Length: 250
Image (cartoon, rainbow, N blue to C red; front, side, top):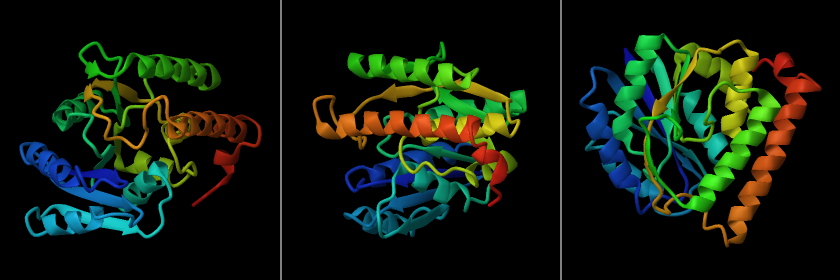
């Protein structure tokens, strides 16, 4: 069994080397052949140079990227459709999420014969530490998306998800959201295609402030919130009114 893990990287020169080392350490202990795919989402700082310096040290590392920044969703799709594994997943850079939980997600995938495993802050075994205001915002958005789409899963937004190869390619070939609401689009398309063997896995999450979303007082934070709501409404429109995902073949 081969595993591919995609890491979208946007201006991560401060953390990317340690991210790669942490991932390689965890994956090397698993009974899988594996590859780590770093997707540099825009050549905007020293991230690419630092990644390439690791290639001689970590043989399972692949480096992908493009000049212009497009957004996390675009970067994840770019890597997922180029991955070679029998199981293909992604994890956020910055390592707010402890990669040690990947082994539990993989065990759960095998045990349940799952199509998709998603990390969940609401799993009873999860250990999470992040600001109260983010918990409130997460609850509000989670409630909104459940009302719109009727998801069975409790948490859609954690940046750790694993897919069998066929569901991964079927789903990500249809994804068009380039920014943060792409997680919801992934699940909406999965449901539309009949991939409903989706299970939640525990995570250890410690918000460090290294993510691209700044504090609640910043304009960039509210720009992200507005963008997520707008994109989510657009997903619902494409799904329920024009049945866009039923028509496209890519």
